[in-house]
Picture (cartoon, rainbow, N blue to C red):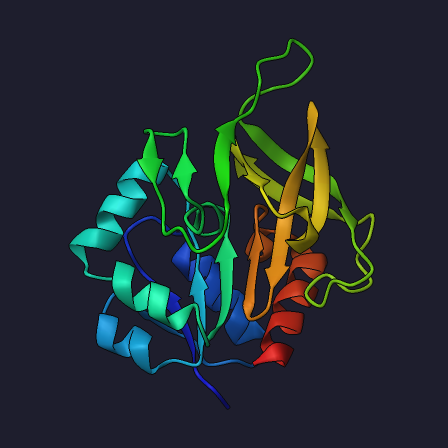
Length: 201
């Protein structure tokens, strides 16, 4: 079985992600060591917290270049902040990201009818072509975020969600998969998503 590497850069809900994969029969490692990341065929980048602090942590751990290299060939899953870090720029901290995908991370517009952060269960609208979310259109998944990704290339968007506006809740591009929601907190639906990811390795 190919090894799943969960990247520890001080910002993730690592144990929940690890336990979910273990429950499904996988044997993930949790590491901040760039050499171990380099060796893995599958990489998971989870994340909770501020974009600018997260990117700074990746730089301090010397993980930026290795992640960019591995994103060319390893099967990759970005979760929440790990999704947002793939992009060119975030309004959170006015910070540049990994620049692997084109688009920006924007703050939800203030509206009296919605709460920020977007926290809790919400329904996703899934494209038929999705490999990660196959058969999960209309299902509820768990979100915690105040910023959302606005993709330049809408063709890579695999699901959308409504919270005051319609936003891109997941993407799929080649070997890169990413979700704004937390599969590890999304019950049976989330386990199905992680199982689908494991099946792509």
